[in-house]
Length: 144
Image (cartoon, rainbow, N blue to C red; front, side, top):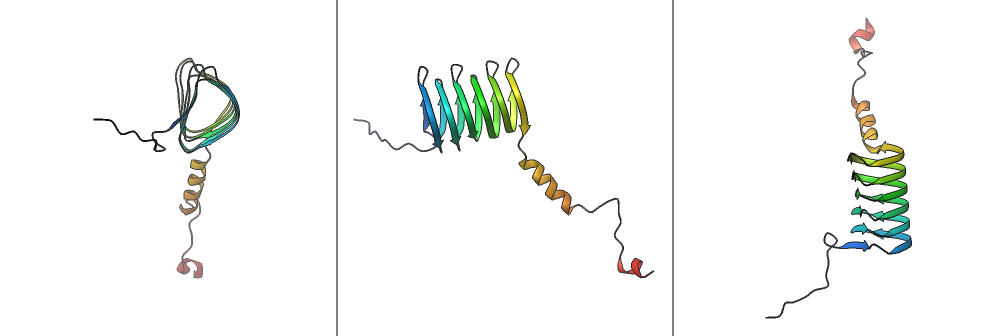
């Protein structure tokens, strides 16, 4: 009995790959995940996960949901979810992240900043909190 093959690949199953020995320049936009074991220079925007292998090198601006790196990143790295830096990884530039896990040996040269979105939520919740330092006067207290 012959096996039926299909070319349909869902976003969860599809992984875009740049293999070791491949050098690319340009811009990547993807809804799926990306794995880089070669080198890429340019902008990467993905709603999925970015994996940079031990031989991977990314130079430019990266915007992704989650990122796991064992390789080299030069530039601006914005990760909305979890940024995981393995022991062999190096990031040289600006990092903006939602959550971050760093293994011993990973190198970061530049700035790290927690994504500002949680701060905005805190600021909006402060507006709903009554001002403890100043008691409001009721109409009875105002007339006295």
